[in-house]
Image 1 (cartoon, rainbow, N blue to C red):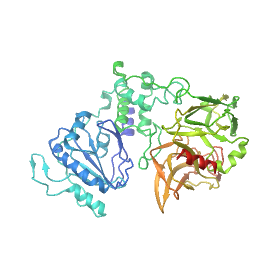
Image 2: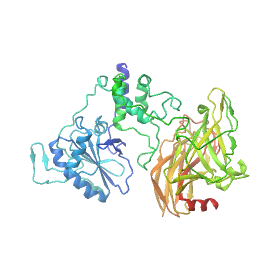
Image 3: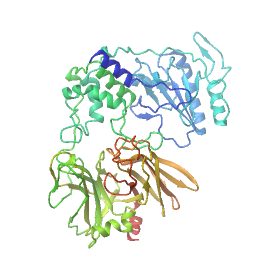
Image 4: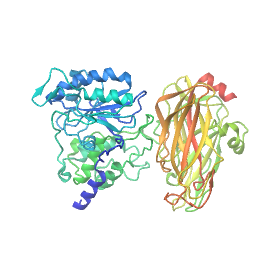
Length: 583
């Protein structure tokens, strides 16, 4: 790489310093035990966050550490969350874990060996603490107290700076002082000569790419290049650094501030920095003996393993090279003579580059596609069975959960083809895996949807809302926002007793990556609750994907029209689910 390219890369990927009154940007770091922790991770009752920088061998840090452990135990009940951060190059995970045990620290101590977060906060000494308000703005930084300094100590502190700041913040009072000088050891800084960085593919980069990228970036999958191959990955090193440093890859669009998700795709700060350093230092391959074992993937055609039933379109669907292809609807009869329960579903188009999405609906015996799609059950999402969308993954349900297929059920495939410059033929297939034991809970589909909106010409923030009432206790497992090319942002809220709780926030909706967000903890819903969707659309010329900003836009199936839908998965006990489906 040229010196100019290196300078551009450094400018592009350098961590942004936090400014006055600005919230600290989210970060993701690994703790000493290997668990991953996000600053913005949702924590019920959290009002304040303390970031405490530590160092294993620093004498003052070791003296202060037990006090930090006690403070966390005393203040956690008042809505204060503590996170430790160790930025020292010389401190490994085992040493940090032992340090925490010795000090009786229960909160996680996160490792920042590439000093991304440390640089962002301009931390100089390992005893510095930061107090963040509910919006993650820094409202105090400095010393825990004034008991210890270099070469001296008092029997007890005269000023408990951190305690005073927390008390004032919780009381809504001014923090004074809001900055003090922290004692302790200087943080050893990395050598920032990126061109000389000792980062290699086999030792440092392969574990990251294998863990986070190979799912898609391997032969036969959606990714445009295989990152299992060292030389191929090295050729794309600058691009890898750009898309991971900007947050475009791995694809994930939910705000970390609201909700926590099982299927989250994110790199830690350390992983991102290693990819930057690898590109900037010439993408060295290193010793193959240092490489981790190559990842293994399910053999055969299906990532869910060997299916129990595979259904496919009865005949190939021709796709032209250009033009707009109206939605196609194809009925497939699986000849089900008995009720079955399904715990895994995977849809595979045979022309993936020209297939935008596939929706599969359930048809009752004798029901036509028009009747099914216009029925009240369809408008509520009850007959929605599965989908294949950009960025989607197969549906794999936890033990005890299943989708139900009634005897005689047929499938209605909705096929949306987007020509990509050459003629193609598609014969989409769907694989189903049946449960091995009787399930305890049925997973049912619902929607929150608005079909009567009008988006004015040139509007850059047109808001469309819809609500759905909850009539019986249930649990929300996942949500998938769906909009088209003008989709700008999306929120899903729980309304209860006149109050709102934000469950999912997608501040930058991306039509090319439509995720199903699986909640790490199912959301308990009560009768009388409502789920409210707020979708925002950009119909202005500033939206580069906008087909025509001069047009009024209404609900429609084609991408140049718009949709405002939240597809939901709810969990009900089997008996309750059958009763609900019968209504």
